Image 1 (cartoon, rainbow over the protein chains, first blue to last red):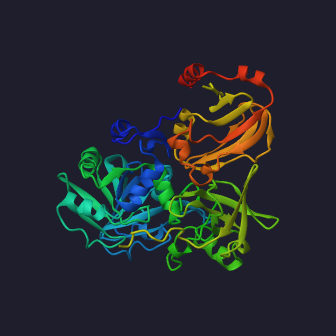
Image 2 (image 1 turned 90 degrees about the vertical axis):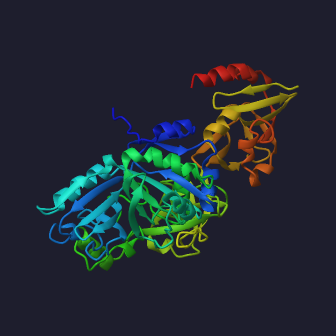
Length: 364
Length: 124
């Protein structure tokens, strides 16, 4: 039996009457007392606080090119300026996604790699074997806490917390600053489609930071249920649903995060796929009712089973079901009539563009 | 005052003469979380006791709703088409889902009283 891991905030979650459930090997809050829709709305309108301590963080120290970090991901790490971060993938030989991740360029010879919780242990092994001798590479997940204030008011909340103006941090940049007497990273990134921050700090400080942030009435805790709706409404992929080792970034519609000028394992497979054409690719669709598609429903186009849904749910902002899937490319054209099927459920749907919801404050 | 009866699948039924009004329990509504969609049954649909009557969806999951008694659907609560959140707000009153013409009153013996249902769900 594998025991579920817990973040330092487990006691706070229980006090706040969270519904806890396993996620990526961790016992995480899915929702608090008010429910997923209320938390979703609070994040879109004000600010929500997410416990994201379960995610993995690795620290790399050494020459970026000489130590091999430059040739690991679908993008160049050496070309990321200090103080900025970049999103991309770690691939297998077949071009399948081992993980999607963000690399933070901390200094000339230092980078932090932030990965998904369920894949962290495997990622660490894979990256370790692909690096060259000489670089220091360590898993700092157990010492690192991560809290995400997200929402249009998050800048005001974090500004008041730090006692300094952070409006100068643009999207996908970060600052290193002091929080509660410790060195912390405040990054202008997130997974909600709203203006927001990801704060990395020593694990033992996360409870204090959680308490301090929540003294501000503008911000309330939100669970992974709301987070999933928020990310789906803006079309962000979820590893384990929309991405896995059998799906390439090109199929997942994320070719924009692959730099073919870089060298990385899986590049040959992606080049082959690019030249022979994709057999399946990402589709996004709106359901014609309030019904929610779910993971692994069938997507039909005409009288043909064109593929499967990889993510789906109810969009509070659109008032209808929305979903993402993998289908034969001819079924992805915007406006294509689709039928989402599962057992005796039939949901007429229409292929549409991403993001589903365009009103977010993410770049404000 | 008509009595409420409950099923193991967390539906309630209120029997008034041979008319049965059906919904889901407050416990079920709380467990499902925010309700986003109720698929109401078609009027005239005939179902047997404990067969699928209709369906409900929350932000977390899709579930079937089973008929607490056998019968034919007489009317449905159209308010749930536009306000499915009524199921969270008032599961055992305003959010009734359908009325049915009951065909076999003896089936009520297979259902639980409120007290029995409360005992039953404590053991879940």
